Image 1 (cartoon, rainbow over the protein chains, first blue to last red):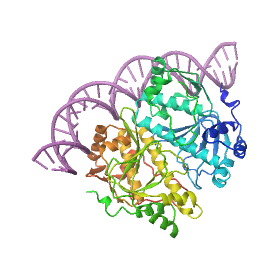
Image 2 (image 1 turned 60 degrees about the vertical axis):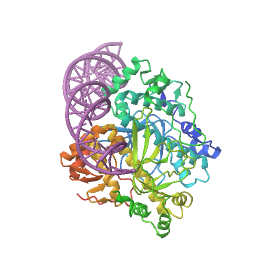
Image 3 (image 1 turned 90 degrees about the vertical axis):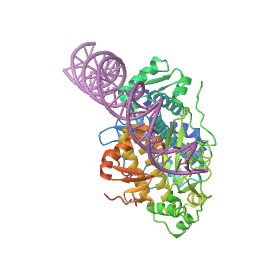
Length: 255
Length: 255
DNA sequence: CGTATACTTGACCTCCATCAACTGTTGTGG
DNA sequence: CCACAACAGTTGATGGAGGTCAAGTATACG
């Protein structure tokens, strides 16, 4: 069923992503293309990084989804951030940094070893200026998604949150070319979506039903379709983040 | 009333803070001590940085409080992060970065121009290694506070949120020596606290009442007192963040 | 003093959580 | 190829946490 794993497990996705942020030269592209998958494929629920663990090597998500998460003592879980194909994680600009959250796969996932990349930007920054730029811009986007999460959880209703998140995911996927126009593959369970949005599973389900009933979305067998993108944008008060003054990544955001 | 402004408007607070994170040498201390207040004092509600604005110079909060915030179209406001004395803001490790949130003062505030510092760590990193370290650790803490905000808003009850936030603020202030044992100055209105916690003013008020009734805290004329820190910690499920493998800043956290 | 702002309290109601049962849907092994 | 777990999604009933509206009381400030 999961077609994601098929053509997508190469580092091309990273190339596509970082090229959005800065125009990379030949030697920079070579660095990215040297990134290889670490192993066949990880099962859902695999721990990529544990809270409290030293972050001593950086990785790329080549295919599949993961998330950064933390649990309360009684088992309630908050998902902080989704990690999707093309996303970097575990890359910190300082030695001895410790992971503040757990990072766990949500689907089958192929991980790439990005230590070549982190090496390049941390120790050979002068040689790879655009790569450095692109990685920083990537980090800025991460912060933007985190802020969006907080805005949703803190100040939006369930209905608004869901609309807002759907648009954000669509936008992020379109940045790496993983959105087909107004639809995209969203291989997450409702439980996961609920934990990201700070809602109960039941109420998330009802909210999705409502959006379907109103003809805003269709969401079946892991494919999300935006039927009324403009109305969704209105309902969720979604705005695309602007993180840098130069070369904004313009996603294919048709009306 | 606000004693904060009196002895505290020098860059000593930054020295105290960054020294927690790394042991600074003489020339590094000199950099910090060269930081001077920008102007007399800003009034509450002054905009320090606007969303969408280029972040071209870094600043330090020398005295007073500010916050990073964003508003929804209909006026609902979410406060993402508090900026308290000794905190850096507007410092980004890349040129052309754009602010993702508004930054606004919440009290009278004295700001220091930290461009000497950002210059040192961005362009003369080799000469100021511990300063670089300390600033990165500082940034890691910022992320930790942001994650805490999200955990609270997403998965905790009002009662838990308030307890958790109070402990976090106490911890942060004790890191810069602004906590007197179990009490600290908290010059924020309930509206501000509510906007940070994703609660209504009325409900925040009732929750504070409850904590008072139970003898957990006292909070009067901007002074917060932790009467039962252990019980609060239990109620809010608060844990101190661990962001680096070396030289953790150990706050004076007596039982 | 008087006015604006912050805080407090009561009444009411709604949004969302919880509990529980039921219905697909996947995937596995007989 | 079917049986049956195991899991994901759906639906109903119910209650409670927290929002909203409104009015009141402190507190600060000019």
